[in-house]
Length: 538
Image (cartoon, rainbow, N blue to C red; front, side, top):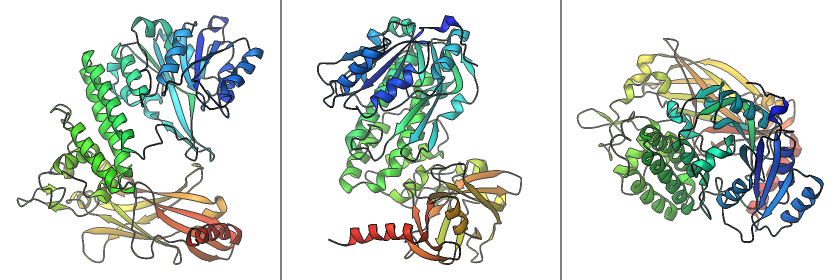
């Protein structure tokens, strides 16, 4: 769908911008909203009782821009819900959308959403949000499968995957629709308020339009002094808030008679929320792990038989089954690998006394009898990766998985190095997979690591991905589990004919996958070595 520049679109949208103590960014957000053109009747900037001069800055901007209105809350609300509700109450245009003070609307976003809304008579219109990592500028699309092509849905239940897009900010809403159904955000301090608001929207069964256009840029500032709620996950209270929001969203949809969407909320929790926090669990201290484990088991105990009716060997379902079967934290490294994307089920591959595949000898009740029956493209294949920069060789070992890998017949692996912040920079090489010489029922490959070429393209982090191909033409994209034996994951200075010196550092990501940092030249190596010395010296 293409934006309609006709005068009929003029003044159709109110953009509500909210912020608290964000003077460094709020002007950019407001400018991006005003820059959408005549379709924006007004920008309602709601300042949540800032103390850093944000409100005064907004007032100065409003003095020169008649489309900008500023509303200042007398007391800080402690969350995003109250200022958004305040802006919604103040909005006068037929359509409304929301924007956070540290994000921006890309050019043409409002026109794309508004054209689709009016052409399809949709009460809710959504578009693609991209997460932009700063300062690198790396962009990752949010739920891209939903927005791959234009679509019109008579009601949300026609596409249950909608519940996976819990964002409120990448959508345009008919103002009268929100008001007629009393749809508002939770007030006060309520982390993950978007999950509840979006559940209320879908519970009202609106007509929905989806467009493939980029309509929102979510800025991710991991080095910020004050982390956003979605990034500040170090305390267990954050997890409690997230599970509470998920539980509330489920109840809203269930009460509205949307059983399919309610079930999809719980499936999304297993596949997204649970996997994300499990990946980070090995990074937390023992006290956090115990509290997290107990809380998660209590939350999962609320699931009924219908919620557990999916594939018992899917990564999220298997994580839940292990958690429920074990009273306390266990198998954290292996759970982290299973929670990775793509999932990896690492050895040991145990069986019950009757020969049924199971999670481990200690948890034989968590059976895996359906796992070998999955198509190879869905198997949680485990590949170990050992990288020794001095030899410039990458050694790969693909493990058997209860006979499923052998039946599929591994042929080769396409080894891909992709730059973390510049996704267009890619190096690929295909290597054959051969049965392991030790007869352990595995397949191995060895390939050179192009250190000079990587450094020449760009310094920084390079992620390793593998595309495994099988005898019948099937394939499976996987990441590789980083082996952590003595001397493996250490920085190394490597002589280079081209650069004189390369500093390389293989490392394991939060999900346990192998990645590689490369810096060319003595100057870059010196900076890293100096950092190491600072950590060593008192």
